Each structure stands twice: as structure tokens, then as C-alpha cells.
Length: 309
Image (tube, one colour):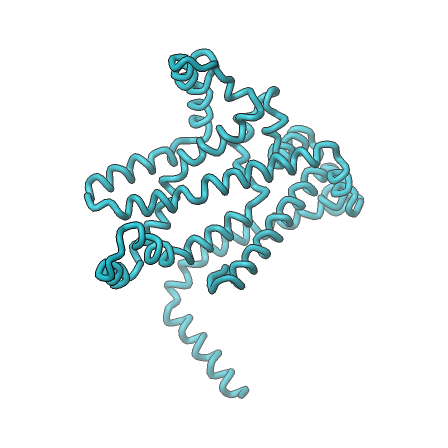
């Protein structure tokens, strides 16, 4: 056994030297992850300290879980968790199926020129910056001069202040996000649909299946592993929403619905200078996301043969 093991090691080392060009291509990716993802973990310790810039990481005194307890007992805790979960789940329920449906619709189009035109138009909003998107929302949804409200008024309805009313914040955020990212999200699903075995499609046609039956029994099972993997990753960021867009859409009138964990951390950490407290909240957020990732991955692993690990 030791001889066989050493032989395997020698073969592995030989293979690395033979394909060293391929391994060199991985080095920048590993360096990026190590420098920007692992080295900053050194600073996580301030979540358990009363961090002071003058004292530094090592000299600041330990306070244990005091910052976590302070957050859990904060009057903002329930509101922040409710807003963050509500916005994230709303975004997942509405936004996750749209790229799948859109990819199937594009895949079924026979005219290649029309398909390319639709794809180009659908992908374009993804490349618009978040600042421009929010500016467009403010212009289109303005209660007095906005295009949407002008249409509502022309049809005899009352004007609605979509930007300032808290009950409209999540809907505006989610559906504008769907418009911006749905086309770009179809790329992975279109690639998965292109890998579905053509023989299965042909067999379904021979058996007399119509288009909807072919989609249900051939296309969807063919891309099911891709859907599961992306769903697991989506659930792994349950408490993470688009910080920039939420911050830009916030105003004093909609804060009761728009204040989420990320914006709260920015406000008390970067603006307020409470670095230890904000680090504790950020660590709590990351731990919840990690736990959700593990749970959903285990469920997917038991229910199907597809999982991240």
C-alpha cells in the first residue's frame, strides 16, 4: 500500500509538471481569493472587541458577544430582519422563475434573427448602472411629472407616490430588478437548454408530445440540475440584498420599509464610526447566509442527485 500510494503521488506530480501551463492559469484566481477574501478575515476579530483605531486590532479590549447581544436587543432588530427577509424572499419568488421562463421562450423561437434581437434588447438593461436605474425610477414614477402617473391619471385613476410610500418600496425594487437582470440571467439557462439531448426532443415529437409537454417532460428535467444549483446559491444570500440600489432608493418617508441590514451597517459603521458593532452585525449576517446555504444544499442533496457538495 505505501508503494502504491507513493506511485500515485509521483504520477500526480508528473501530471502537474506536464500540464503546468493550465495550473499557472489558476494562480491569479487563487491569489485574488486569498488576498481579498481570506486575508481580510483577520479583521473579523473586531466584532468581539471594543475596537479603537488608536489601539489597533491587538490592543483593543475583548468584549465577547456584547455587540451581538446589543443588536439582538436593539429596537431596530425586528424591523431590519423583517425588511431584509421580506425583500429577499419577494425578490426570489418573483425574480428567480422569470429567467427560466424567458430562456425557454427564447429557446422555442425558430427565427434566429428575431431571437437575437430579443436577446440583445433583454440583455441591455443589465449594463445600465444602478445610479442610472434609480434615476430612471424617480423620473418615471414621479407623482406629478412621471410617465406612469401620467398614464394612471389619463385613465382616470389617482396619482400614486410610488417612491415615498413604504408599501410600494419592495414592489418597485423587485420589479425594476427583474426588468434589469432577467435577460442577463437567461444566459446560463440557454446554455443548459442547448445541452439537452436532441434525441429526447425528437423522441417526444415522435410520441406525439406537443410543445408544452415537450417543455415539461424534456426541457425542464434537462435544466433541473442548473436550476437547483442556482437556487441553492440564491438561498445562500438570503439576508443579502442589493445595498447600492436600496440605499439610493431610500428616503425619510419610506425608511420603515426600506431600511435593511446592509444599509443599517453602513449608517452605523461607516457614517457613525461604530466599527465593532457593525462588524458584529455583518458577521451575524454572513453566518445566517452560510447556515441557509448548508441547509438548502442538504435538502437538495436528499431530494435529488444535485448539490454543491
